[in-house]
Image (cartoon, rainbow, N blue to C red; front, side, top):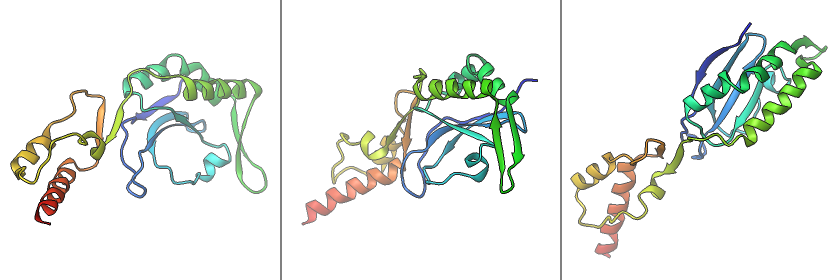
Length: 184
């Protein structure tokens, strides 16, 4: 029986708590026979079901496009993930539910670890904080609100570039700082 892909989200975002960039995580749930790719925050915590191996979580380096991850999950990664699901059991150890892998499943898990950590997926997103993206824009005290709105509406030329933060807010703050400097 083949596993279900319940969703793929590799588009990076901002962590609302730390301001850092999210990371891409592959979750494998052997008991429910599904995988899911999500964006996660670096919150320095691990859910108990992952800590005890009932659900497995892997970090995917970079932020590959969704179609690239889907091809991996349906191609090279499929037999590895299926071997992990088929060789996984969960049982109560007296204190917690724990996940266990057969030797074959452990070998597949080790290979999946290597592929996800060093697979170098092509076609990935680039996440740029707005202050870095607009760093060299010529904003002066005379820049009008309309010019700022027009500049903020311009999306990066490449579809793989994601701007993190509010462009108009950042550009307005830069302009206002220029105005304050001119007044002093």
